[in-house]
Every structure is written in structure tokens, then in C-alpha cells.
Image (cartoon, rainbow, N blue to C red; front, side, top):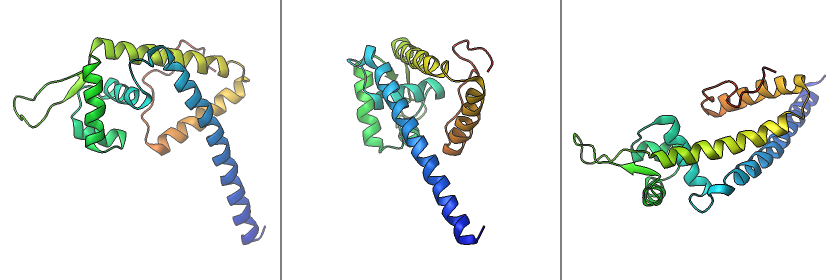
Length: 166
């Protein structure tokens, strides 16, 4: 294969991968939105993401949260203010550095994260259960590589919903 043909094949492979990931991401976004249905009167999708980050990181400073969410600190502050008003997080001034007000989840905030995550997991499990085992193994490999390349931390449990090993 000539160098030009190889470049063309690489571009076509990349385009196929991008198209597949975009299609998959549309499905995952629709699942995420549906999973928020039970709590949509309490949190938006971006606010839920903040709750998820707090669930994973524990007590977090506002500046760190803004970096983790890839938003401006003022945007993170507005989100935190809304979650504070809803009773889903608490912020307390650090007595050693009064400029810091780390935030953490309340029990209700953790309950929302758990509830939405469970609904999302159930819907994903229903979809994955319709796939052959070899495709499931390939999906695990591909999604692990994709999330690692994107810097997303892995789930704590390999099979959080009690799925059988596939």
C-alpha cells in the first residue's frame, strides 16, 4: 500500500471511530437525561455532574471543582449555590484558611447520586444484555481505553450492578 493510500485508510478509520463514538455518546446522553427524570425538579445535568465529582472526590475546594468540571470558578460557584440551597451540598469555611470554603455532599446529595446512577446502570445493563458476550468483552476493552485516554477515572467496582463476568 502506498503512503497516500495508507494515509487515506487511516483517515477513514479515524472517521469511522469518531462516527461510532458520536453515535454511542448520543445514546449515553439520552440514557443520562432519562436517568435524571426522577430528580429533574432538583438538579440539572451539569449540577448532577458536580454531585458526582463530589461523590468521587469527597470534600473539594471551589477552585478545584471548577477545574474538575472544566468551568469558570464563577460558574462553579453558581452551581454550588443552587445545590446548597437545595440541601444537596454543604460548604463550611476552613478555620485555618478563611478564604477556603470546601464543599461536600449531604446525605440527600449522595442519595440522588446513588439513585440516578442506579437508574442509568439498569438501563445500560438492559442494552448490554442484548449483546453477545464477545462484543461485551470488546466493549469493556474499548471503553476502558477510551476513558483512560480521556482522563476519566474508572468506576470503583468492576460490576457495580452484580453483573456476571462476561
